[in-house]
Image (cartoon, rainbow, N blue to C red; front, side, top):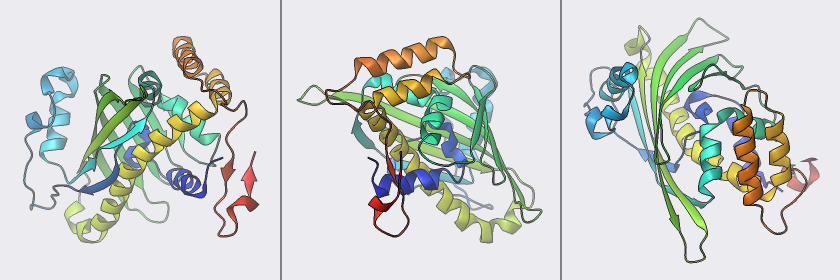
Length: 287
């Protein structure tokens, strides 16, 4: 059973894409990082943030520009949780799969499609569209470059931005031989919209709150989904088998990892989400 806290997390995440739609994100309890805006910026050297020489040449300058000339920056606090390394990487590297697991448990207007081997596009049904590339995918470092557009459904307001999302991951074993993941996320956002300086004073606090929420909730999401897959392996493999956007190798690999990590006493059913209605949480359940 998923408790009220997790249910609220799923519901909040169902309402927006932001940078979190990559389903890669991580880090719980973000803390304010360096910030810049409207001429008050201090620059960060991209070479001190990333090994730029490891990025494909066609993305290198765009990534460096967003980091160097960012409008917003958030550095996440490292988070640790038990999870098999292969399962963790499947959830990070296959956003279509992870989103499908999520949407089976929580109503969400978010749509996602795979455009290529490393490119995805999603929209949240509320005016936000994001297209992003995995410009680097290794077990210890993931880098995403996203192009984000928001158009207000109530006015002519429009925001265009580029986002660089960086995920650092470490792996270790506890004394009980259980594998743990430790990861943290760093997000850089560069607003490209004209007229941003005029809007910054009123819009900036809203975007900062959303960014902070996204960075925090993304890590919680990865941790939550990994626990659900371990506790409900039959459900997870059934969802994976029905994902036409996944190639057969990805489906087989995920199902094999889930089977190998099946715990004694694991459920053959699907998770139960306890609705957060303000009343007794046990009053409303989705089977």
